[in-house]
Amino acid sequence: MKRPKPPDRGLDKLDMAILKRLADNSRITMKELANEIGLSAPSTTERVRRLEEADVIQRYTVCVNPIALGLQLGVYIRVRPMPGELTRVAALLASKSEIVQCDRVTGDDCFIAKAYVASVDDLEVLIDGLLPYATTNTSVIQSSPVESRAPSRGRG
Image (tube, rainbow, N blue to C red):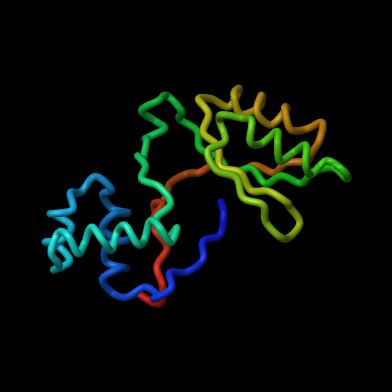
């Protein structure tokens, strides 16, 4: 993900309200959004356009339930490439459709990948594909007390 530069004018409380509401429901109409934040629809549309141009809003997306797709097992895989294999492992992780997110991190591991698979057998195949080039440590997701959400500035 590229790092956006902050908007020239900074973000105010209305911008933050827009971002929170769009993160909750990106299909909301501009009229509904305007009513919720207390602006006119044209003013709200202009603010959203500016947030898009400043790369604060990077995309609109859908949240898919992996269980509905038959992917019963969610995991985090910490990945430590063998010496000289960082680039290959990054490309390998990107090529695996089971991996829905991957971050390069500091510390003992270089990557933390989130994946969904249908079974333990499928998890084994996924991990085995990494083993010639990296060591792994896998944690099974039991539950998610905090679902994915938009970042927020400050407290609360």
